[in-house]
Image 1 (tube, chains in turn blue, green):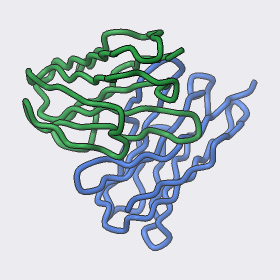
Image 2: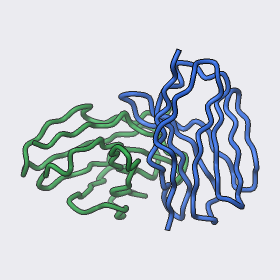
Image 3: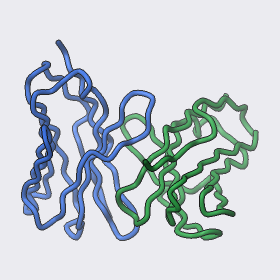
Image 4: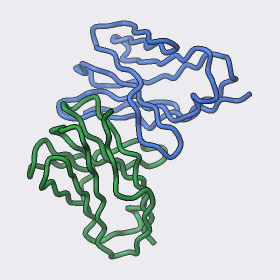
Length: 109
Length: 111
């Protein structure tokens, strides 16, 4: 079965880089996702990476995938107050997504 | 833009009441999903539907049922609400099972 784990909290200073880590267990996952949830809102797809890629960059976001260790990370460069949110990683299984518990990122001035 | 709407943002119900949560999507997506979100547990899949009148159990279907009579609408039903069903409920839709688009959520409190 799938089991996705993330640390629950991250505090970062405005302007610094944030790195959110995630581990997963299903080695057959073809896609891995990062979702963002702002306060009072649903989840918004931020980015995804296909399992045959090591890295994907999209503006301030960099996703790194280590398939051997089943480790996924999301780096946010130049973190802003608007990046304060809960970030979920998710892996694609046979018919569903399996989500981690979410990492609450707090950006301090 | 894909739009997924949920009938209520906040709902307060009493133990034993029958509760309906409605979800509507406007993108003609085949698949729709109901999750509950609890702190420290992330999102857990309750039910999903891949076509009208079709439904499949997710990871935690106990105490819930669903209805999909029209493609754009997916309802979650709590037959007899209990306090342990107090949670945030999120609906999502997708053309395939990934890249899901989420509604804003319904925060349900059962007293």
